[in-house]
Image (cartoon, rainbow, N blue to C red):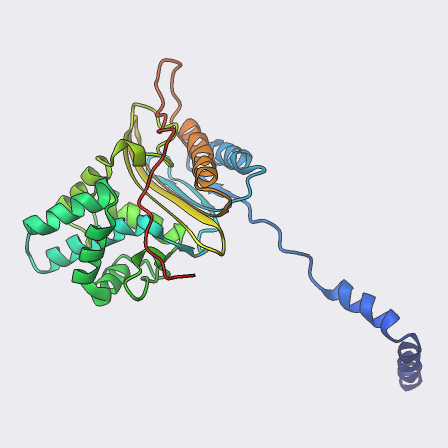
Length: 306
């Protein structure tokens, strides 16, 4: 019976031809991948659900492809979205360059030279590209990869050919970096961590946009941003921030691409940041919140001809 049924089935399929086969193949094709959802956890009751809801609302109808990392030590709160998706770093890699410089100096038991200090200050506070290129060349890929290994930033890939702005980074690794910058560890000395935070706290006003948006005046703000435009994925616009005060110690990485304009990406990041600050640090009506410049700027990093 089985053999006879099989031949009959084959004959039917042959008779029906493509009319039968095409719908069968289509039915077997999986549905288009759904957009990943924000995922939050917290040691504080109700906070994870509130953050998930408000971050999701902040991203509603935004066409950017957004990756988010959030960690608050005080409430043991984390949020992630596309944590391992790779993005061109643009100028956010400058924090990694500075951390590598300080890590290497610590290994050799030396202070930074006056030239290195000058270059590092320009690189972070003004996002100076020439200063970054000099430090990138001085360090070389071996030392940069050495720091990334020590920092367990295993998915970060330095840009080749001197194009440091095309370093591949993700939100999960950037959060590892910010955690090293903000708490005692064996990779960066206490002085190195303080120095990085000091420079990120002195970024010029027109580059203090992104993750600081909506931060209450009761917390200190440290930031480094980046952007670049390419023929694929449009504008990449990113912001890294650390915040300390009002009983909280938190860090945030928001990476975006597929933005139609630079301003569109900035707005997307700031919508997310405002929701996070509001939920994490409750304030009174009298507490001022940080309002970034209406004319954000950032260094436009070099990329190969497209």
